[in-house]
Length: 316
Image 1 (spheres, rainbow, N blue to C red):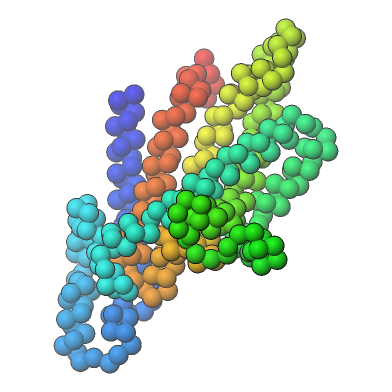
Image 2: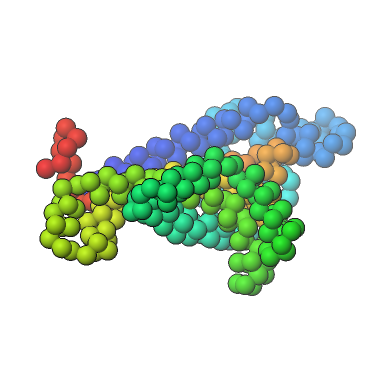
């Protein structure tokens, strides 16, 4: 286990270094001059432009700029936002709770809805199974911004059940304001998790040990809980890494649609005005969260399925 953790840690460090280089390089290659935004569209003397470029290290060679940036990241200095004239770390810290609430709420909906629908489809073949397949197919194919528009039109404008914009205050207000955004964010992933759950449970239901357990008269609920659902959790857990990545990316669309002041909305506004330090910091944060989620999945996987893998791909 110690050796595995060391290898995973080395892989994470290498992934973050390569990703940080790609993020920094892609932002630098974007068209436009960040100095023009810093000036706010005003004309300035060459000396003023030179001073701004010196302050933000815009004249330094690319390797020097990257080294200064990554050195600041390691020490907790993410730079200063050109748009807000504030430290990037403070901006992200102020907006992070809203994004975490949104992801947590959506994650709960995904787990409950995806597992319930997938299990229902696997255990109730026929009309129920086909209905779930059609419904999850539609959900999976529906983009988050389309779901946001539909939810706002129905539940906010027509029915007036939930507010359409803002973060809300207090526990009740926050839950009320985040219900529609969380539903829009979760819709696609509920369909994905439901289909993975259905496929995995159908595979386990056809196993020989499940048939033996049924032939011994063990109640069906116990068979499903002990022999089917538990063994089906391995692929379900694996797909959570993809779900986490999708949630982190989709938050920018959902937060913008619902007027939430979260990290995703901050990223969108920063890309629009070419606020390089914010774009780089948020992009690296997303990568870090994705890598961390996959690390947790890799560590939990042996606990769910402790069977050692055969070198040729089978099990012993």
